[in-house]
Image 1 (cartoon, rainbow, N blue to C red):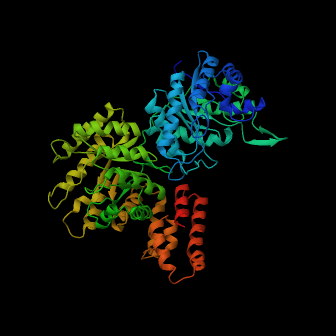
Image 2 (cartoon, one colour):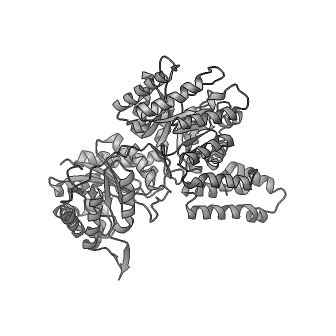
Image 3 (cartoon, rainbow, N blue to C red):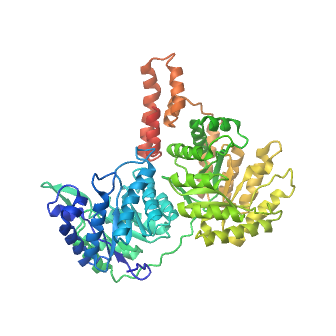
Length: 637
């Protein structure tokens, strides 16, 4: 049976554990695939009889990290049981979380999680599974490991489902937008929400998903929240109330309906009865250009985006020293500075001849992602470095770069497609950089058309029309500005520029840079790689947004410049408290060594460490920072 979401709505099963509990079963559910297969088959049959189009095998916790047993045997048996019960309906292997946090937040290595999920997926496909349902994930990084494990080792379609808290956040800080960006980047077949809450709470999340997702949506709520009555777990949403809520989801445009904890065959039966004749809504491509971190998604095109340029060794002696010495605290401090200054994305380039670029890039990404929640632009001339960095990146990255050279496109496009990235395309090819705007438009068109043959939509391409220096080529700025305008107008793709290149060799570079930046914004520039610490450059951005109507009510302009008026010189002197808040362990250690020479231990604890942890705790509770930053601060303390 093929699932065509344009023809009708499809139905998944409900809770397995709920029915096992009613049978009086205790212990590990997955072991019942060996110990009591008839009971598992009976439950599957009840859901098939209720009208399910597919059932999930009893494999939720069957992975070698969570289960000390013969995983291969358990998974194979579970699929066989489900296959026998399903008849002509579909069988999904159910892949749940490992129960451990991945590094750097926890102790589990990304590749170890990947291997555990791979084992389950491979055995399931060999045993007859039709689908892989990766569900109840609360961490984007673990979800990525699971999705890659299925995709790289099987041909199974992937239905990927997160479980959010009441505020629409994952355990590790991610929101719905970040979750969708990651999953669409990884090319999953269905995006879902399951568990956590009943249909009423999940409804607001479903509305958001339908607004931003170009992928079919699956909703599998609990039957409300669990309560203990007379020693038994009960749920407060009965089958009638549940099915009425599910009907609303169907009418909203959800493609797959099912249940999680507390739901029974009756919940599913009534859902099928109320929803089976509802005509599905057409799933539309939202045409959004989005990059993300584990916690935040940044849409490119709604208003101009700033890509911080400071983590790039070109012309930066101190950064070169830090990279040579593997002083990652310095890179993190640069990330913090740019984040505080208003950057939306951070460029990370560690390319130097005397270092192992691949290993340094990977470590830099981990350290920076542990400290700041902004999405990153992975910047390297080496496809090998790009691939190794994309694999461990937690989110949907911006990838810098590809160009019009056939050899480069052939190497980079498959990598970007596999891991999910928005690609920066440089308008140069085997013949160099065209001198005319029309020439650069032609290369941009070649990049977009070639990307399409790899399954990469133009919404995931950002064209760099290339900024050349006006001191060497008097017409350079005019050509670049016109190229930006033409590429936007003719191709309908987003554009980006490294703005400061225009002023090489000139004095007072910020003056020229800021005027050029203004001109390119007027031509339709979507993103600029620049120094967000530069007040003239950021002043252009805030003024442009206010004048262009994208800063509604001039709120950002007012907040920035009223603050600058009050505090004319905003110079932060880093102290121990600041280092702890920012998670800079090495710097905190050095400052403590100095302080302890002239202060009592208790004075340092009460004056710096405790206030820092109090501030971090308050920021975490209010959602200003997320679990990675909390853990880094604790480590520094």
